[in-house]
Image (cartoon, rainbow, N blue to C red; front, side):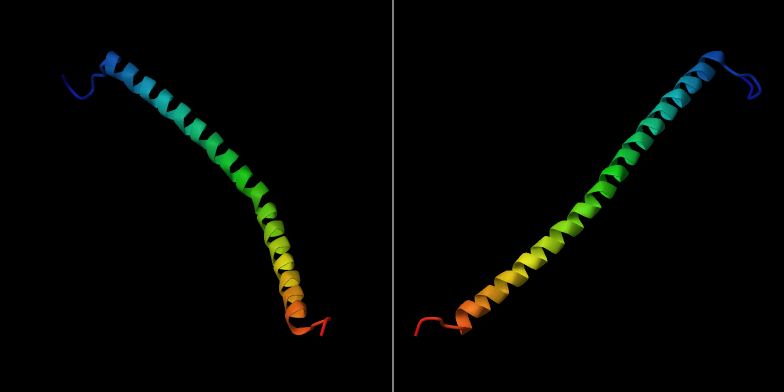
Length: 74
């Protein structure tokens, strides 16, 4: 078989493979967009969680210092 002849069966198989790859890439793009959206939504939640945790630990430390260093009953 010379190189300028195209086997229709092999050509059809290549077309099917290309269609399958295109569908796979499109599916991966949708998954990546969904993951990106999820990460963007969670970013604000983490910031709020860290702010609340820092505030609570600061108040706890102040309350502990007061309880330790100031005695109301002598």
